[in-house]
Structure formats: C-alpha cells, structure tokens
Image 1 (cartoon, rainbow, N blue to C red):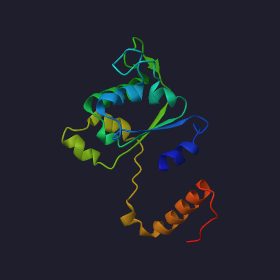
Image 2 (cartoon, rainbow, N blue to C red):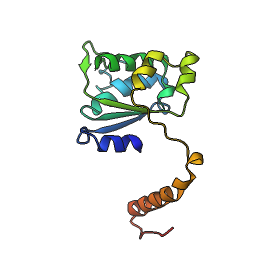
Image 3 (tube, rainbow, N blue to C red):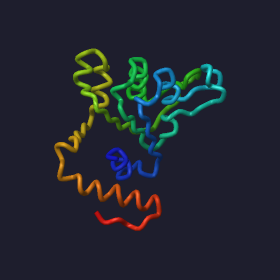
Image 4 (cartoon, rainbow, N blue to C red):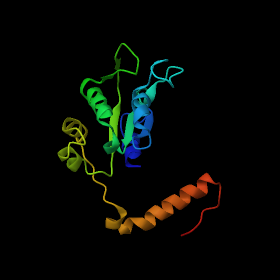
Length: 165
C-alpha cells in the first residue's frame, strides 16, 4: 500500500503501477516475467511477452519480497539499475527503460548481504531512500483505523451498506 501511495503522489502517477511478488514466481520463470522473452526463447515462450519492466514503462515497478531473488535475477536487476537497459530473454538488443523501482521485503537484507545471500552492490543501489514500517505489534493504535478502512473497502467492493465498527 505504501508503494502505491508513493506512486500516486509522484510525477509518475499518470504512468502504470506494476507489482511483482518475487517470492511467488518460480526461479526459472522470474527472469522472463521481469524482463520479457522473445518467441522461442524457452520452452514456454510460444509468443513474445513484454515483461513487468516494459509494462511499468513511465511509471513504477514494485518488487515485493526482493530478498527472495536468485543470484542470477539479482545480477540482471543490478544491470537494469546501473544502465537503465535490459535484455528480454532471447533478444539481441537492449531495451532502454524509464521506470522507477520500489522494493519491499520482510527479510533482513543486511544479514543476507553479510551471509553472501544477497548482492551488496544491489543492496546499496536499492537502499537509496529506506522506509521502515514497523509491524502491527509495534503500532497497536493503528489497528482500529485499519479495521475500519478494510471493512469499508469490503462493503464498497461487495455493494453492501456500510457497517459500523
């Protein structure tokens, strides 16, 4: 939700907001999902796919659970951040990207860097404006407001009359 608020209150608000949960995509498909693939680039690439970076062009790409990226995906994401270019799978030429990347994780990335499970150069590229959001156990006073918000949202979505809490 915080990534969407940042996007909606930025100069990129008129551009797309694209989300990718890095933990929900199998490692073998992550690169294709992120950068796209040319037809025939792998066994399931029966047609050209754009990928999330292209879908977020001019807007924001939100990478949730970035701590779960494989070493190979980390290297390719680092290349995108460093050069603003990427190669879809099977493509011969690089594509220039105009996309802001916001990431989130529940993992302790500093500990993963120390354990050589997350690239330190990617960590420092991604750790430009860190925003720490403590868990609800540290913000119990927020729970009533969150309950009201989600109940109101559910009532609207299901066309119910508002329910008082």
